[in-house]
Image 1 (cartoon, rainbow, N blue to C red):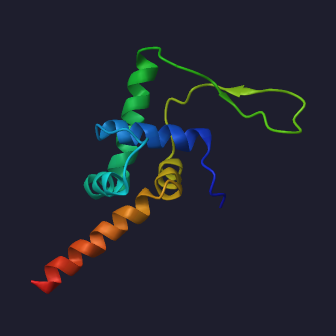
Image 2: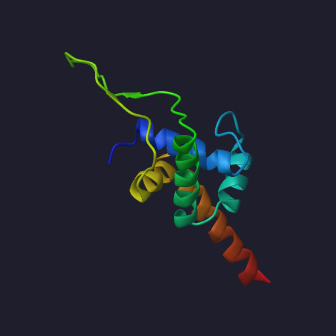
Length: 117
């Protein structure tokens, strides 16, 4: 697995943060941990992402096309703005961004707190 996020994974992460009322940029580690702690399970994240994409599609809103041109290519090609993303794309965005690790770290901390009482 590449650690570099794809365009669709970046989009998924932005939509996840948006659904939580947060920005994915310029946060402290504590801020990211707090977002990860209150994020729902993957299925709910996936539903939130596709709900936002579905609303954009229904409104005819496609802010950009995705360009997959890379070094060595002879031709530029674009893919339309997605109207939905797979659960695997959402999962990979959550993992590659480090948010899944923070989410798990929070759960472990919570278990330790409960077991120490």
